[in-house]
Image 1 (cartoon, rainbow, N blue to C red):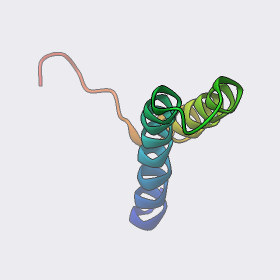
Image 2: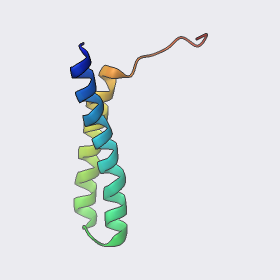
Image 3: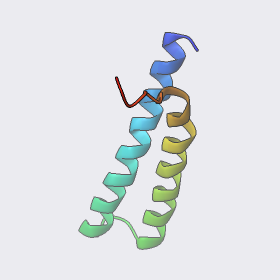
Length: 63
């Protein structure tokens, strides 16, 4: 995987995490409905899990 692809996947993954956090704050503040919050959480989770598997590398315990 080249550097540009990995960088794009990282950006998408971080945006997914931010979407999950911000939707929680928005529903707490009354800006969105709980149903919309649920959909945004699912979308953020999918963005994170579908991209993180490509750029998070397992490291041996000794390193």
